[in-house]
Amino acid sequence: MEHMTAEARPASPPLTERQEARRRRILHASAQLASRGGFEAVQMREVAEAAGVALGTLYRYFPSKVHLLVATMQDQLQHMHGTLRKRPPAGDDAAERVADTLMRAFRAMQREPHLADAMVRALTFADRSVSPEVDTVSRLTTAIILDAMGLEHPTLEQLSAVRVIEHTWHSALITWLSGRASIAQVKIDIETVCRLIDLTEPDPAP
Amino acid sequence: MEHMTAEARPASPPLTERQEARRRRILHASAQLASRGGFEAVQMREVAEAAGVALGTLYRYFPSKVHLLVATMQDQLQHMHGTLRKRPPAGDDAAERVADTLMRAFRAMQREPHLADAMVRALTFADRSVSPEVDTVSRLTTAIILDAMGLEHPTLEQLSAVRVIEHTWHSALITWLSGRASIAQVKIDIETVCRLIDLTEPDPAP
DNA sequence: GTCCGGTCTATAACTTGTTCTAGATTAGCG
DNA sequence: CGCTAATCTAGAACAAGTTATAGACCGGAC
Image (cartoon, rainbow over all chains, first blue to last red; front, side, top):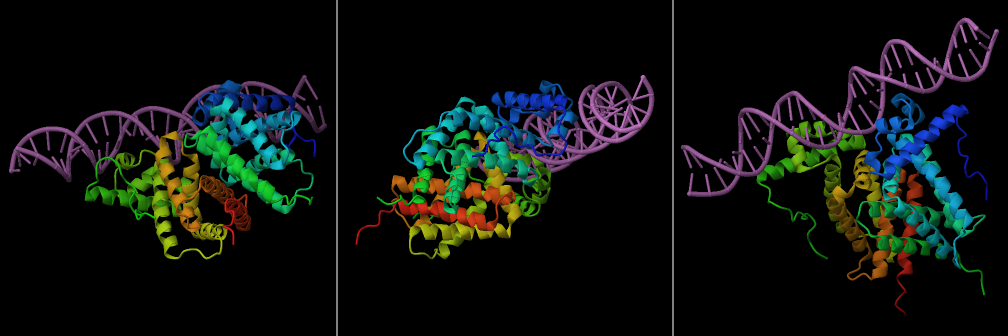
């Protein structure tokens, strides 16, 4: 496992201290506003005001509302990845541990449903211009799942299973957020898809 | 199997002929515009003009852009359901047939990627106010998958598998539409998730 | 310190989804 | 036919994302 939890910005010019602070204020304001009204409550003018920057500056840091919310999700995911690592999931086999981890993440979302709404809606609404950022989020999610499986060198088959688990995770979240599925239903879906993991683990002989 | 392919409008007052025609013109215009530039090319003023109705009328028929595009998807799905029924999928077991069917649907989307983009983005972006319509689309998709499986009375376990397959289908489509996954990758994901079906079919003894 | 290019602020303007209004048209009904 | 309520039209108006502009400010080169 690599240890770059908090760093994923290979980007262009290294930000000055004031700039880093601005960026942080913006992300904080974004999360704050999202925690109340969800996606639509994150209004660019309000984010700018709450963060104490001009609207143009906000757009310099995040070229669109979707970019901003995806970056917010990146931020939150990194926190969560750290948190999850501290208490590794219980469970005998990999499938259980992954389901356990995702349910833990799901409970975190239940605590801030509006924030979850804003982030997930932005994630799935993102078009090609946001692909790099969305990809970063996806890699973070993959890392979390692989951590839960406890694998150093997953096979191609296992990576496929992880992809499908991620698909299910995102889509199930959406159905929950839009009120079309209950918490129990999401739990079942997660547990169902996690059985795919067993399929890829032909238990190593008696 | 029931035969209500083209009917799913239990709604309030039965539309007059002219109204039905308007509705159809609107959906046609929507699909037309979507086929060019995708989600953002479907602009309400343009749809209204192309359909030859006033903007206010468009909003009376479809209370938002997302409603309109979800209805467009409903329309397209019904066509596809009909088409798919004519030539049932080849394949020995249920998993193969479902994967086959979904890949056929996927190829249809590849022929109109912009239209697919508009419809799928609307579907996942829809909030609670569109739940009933999104649910209808979901039921249609479920029906298509169950048809492919060839089941009259699926078990609860099988229904769970179908749910997960649907999740994967939607999410994989999104990653493809936003350029983060190749066609080949989507194929693998579909085939991977379809293996869940085998898990629910403890083959009925010799 | 002074100067310069890039950054930030404040604000207006533009775009597109959505709502509203006033008047014309239509459908159903006696 | 003539009436009435609902519907439709044309167009203005509003909301929020995004872009553009002009000037103030900051940080590094000299």
